[in-house]
Length: 35
Length: 399
Image (cartoon, rainbow over all chains, first blue to last red):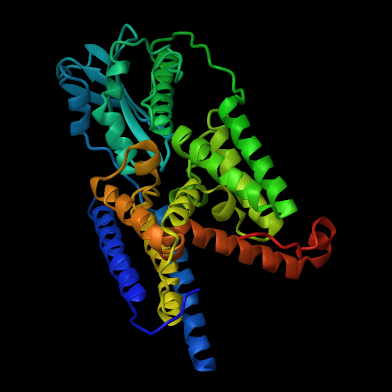
């Protein structure tokens, strides 16, 4: 199912969504740490 | 290649060792209540004297002299969803509660916020300290934060009954410990039975029925999707009483039992309401995106790192719920941190194009399930006769 060039459109799409999600999770961790 | 494998094993052992160290560290963390809190909870008292250590109890005096007791302040403790809650209960000499205050808690922030915001604590003011403080009968729970409501009630009950019996010589009726089996627990058992039937028959249709039922039962109705906090609570020994929280025990031990028995991650693919929701979004969008397999393989390691960070923070802060980053509570219980709300549209949109986007790249519960599956494999290796007798371990399970 997962194949194609290293940075095809699908991979870039996935990476952008993953990055946004990671930023939010990072923020949740940070809030937990300073609480 | 073997060098790389050795390095990975090294990192894994280091990660496990740090988790064990953090766990030991968390055992030595203690919280002290500040004396100022006594004055806040008992307005009008000018002096306090400690009269008991367990539970911590203070006599409250009207002035500096010690002949004018106007009441007592006691610290009660009980567990909520994400950990213990310490509640100061101030009561007068007639046996009525003056005020209560949560002075310390390890509760999941969103649940705690909801309870405080919806003035749950006000219900206790003026109540007799002999009250049973039973949720649903004497006290109304805050919807979507039942375990937190129950934890606070139990802490108040513990503290006030101590004062009633020991300071005011009152007779208090101690409620019987009785396991209550309600429609909620029965629904979860039925859901388990349904999924077991499907697993044994490898029936895809039953899997879909099970998943859609789970969205409504474990999701919107009970808001009980399993989260990483549940496992940290279990390891830390913060589980609330089984008598009042049978549902939680059924879910956690039922799922652990199922995974250990079948040797496959049956929770995520059969019972998780959030996984089911993503699969439905996937059906709508058709999950057309093809990701480069190397990138995909790397990204699929993310949940391990995230689960590790979440557990480390939970242990170091001695608060299991504090780093539970899953948005389950937001979507099913309409509660949660503001920032967690942003996850919902991102995940649901991404799941239309990438199959089970959250499960694959972020979910810490999947990591726990994987570790349980590994444990099952090890048990199978160590005790082949025992496991072989129960189940041959070769049955194919739809995933």
